[in-house]
Amino acid sequence: MANEEKPKQKMGFTIIKNDPTDGHKGFGIGSLSLENVSPVIIDIEEGTASVEIGAMHARSDVERGIKFTTDRADSEGGKAYWLVWVTIDHKADGPYYAGVTACEMVVNREKRRGYKVLADHVNKMDKSMKRHIIVEHMDAPSKKVLASFLGELNPDLWARSEEQLRQGLFV
Image (cartoon, rainbow, N blue to C red; front, side, top):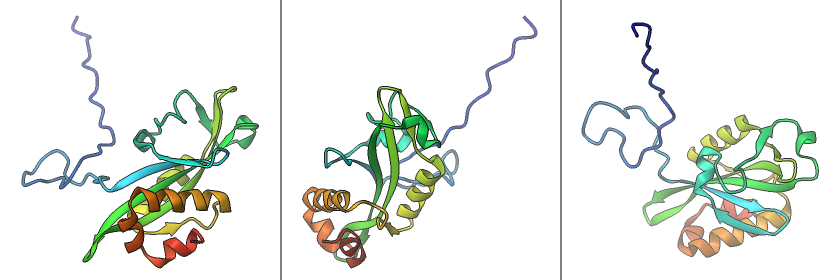
């Protein structure tokens, strides 16, 4: 069995908590800490919002078992969703919603097909982490759902958030 090769070690995207270096030099140096980013999925039809941590790896209940493409025709007749990246940061007076960016997603359960542009999802997550507010392209009812959800989830964070967020969501 001289021809046996060891399987190559796979280096995946690592999500880690707190300080990646934590006083030691080694694995994890230079990794992104996504500790303060949460994905919120808005069901446009139902008018509901929920935190779906699985969406960090495109494994939310909504996305599971769906083959996604960038062709809208593949998921025609499906349900529309917003995936909203919410980043929390701290000011002198406490934590607040610092970055809020929304991405489009359509899922057709029957066909097991979906529409999303992965690059847009990644870029919007990055923008959220960089404290951007990008919600102007959302439909008005979904903006209201998001505003209510964020306000009820933590009224203090909502109150300390930038005026741009409340204006962007028409509150």
